[in-house]
Image (cartoon, rainbow, N blue to C red):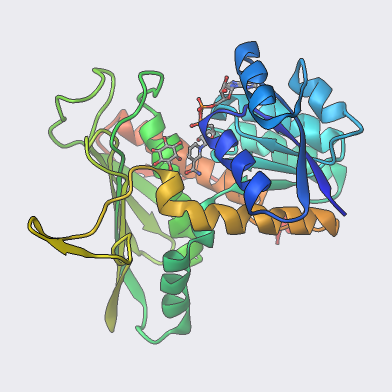
Length: 334
Ligand SMILES: NC(=O)c1ccc[n+]([C@@H]2O[C@H](COP(=O)([O-])OP(=O)(O)OC[C@H]3O[C@@H](n4cnc5c(N)ncnc54)[C@H](O)[C@@H]3O)[C@@H](O)[C@H]2O)c1
Ligand SMILES: O[C@H]1[C@H](O)[C@@H](O)[C@H](O)[C@@H](O)[C@H]1O
């Protein structure tokens, strides 16, 4: 079966997914797109030779769309995810599922009412080879208990529409999800430390900031989030365990030696750094949809990450630890 995809919000991320579906992903085709910006719909339809829908409602209802990918801004996700659930169509939603926990809770309620898992959240780092190897080593027990994890999440820059809370609920959410997945534990409290700010930022941003998180068993984790470093998309992770330290290695396998010395090339964005992970993530989702199955991160994962984000945003406005408030996990997501 070829899965016919409708995409909502084909901007930077969406078009990168469209390119993957067109070139390397098997078993899917793009039926059409919709976007709040009509100019973008025209441009994308011309570029990809697909149909343009006037609204997300029209796209979701179309009999020519089997499954939906949502790549619009975080605050716009909830309404369209719920519409997909109500239409009984599998939906892949880019992170964050919703920027706050209340929205994700409403999604979980709608999904449980529908009686089957329809939502997959785009937490692509779970599909990255180096993170997966790290997880396999930690899970094997060879290095004993994990005690501390250090993270670095650096971007060359962000657009002006990037609001102050996005450092947590759009950027830090990657580490929040990855840390839950890597440790198999929930995050119970968070704090935000606020170092000296770079001058090369929009005035409304605390940049960089350090998000500190603690898990149920007491694993202590930090995340330096610096979204205007001016040079590269630089993702680092180091887990300190009782009998060893496991660290993501350099991003590029190739090292170049020349008159300027020995160096490797840094990645500039998420597509370069996590290109392989995106392909695996989307391919697994398409293959599962074709068999009527669910795969990948669930609405619960989106919700749990959003609960930590809510606490993180509150911590950003204060100077203290903020507890993470979360409902018990429904059996539906066990
Ligand atoms: N996994 C990753 O590493 C990663 C990387 C980049 C972006 N993202 C996520 O992808 C999503 C899109 O980010 P982007 O960088 O592509 O942004 P973008 O601005 O390039 O594209 C977003 C598109 O959505 C459209 N849009 C906005 N609101 C809409 C609405 N209500 N209905 C329909 N269309 C709407 C915009 O017009 C735009 O075309 C975000 O959720 C972001 O967090 C994930
Ligand atoms: O939406 C993007 C995306 O998730 C990137 O992977 C992250 O590095 C950026 O900080 C974020 O704004």
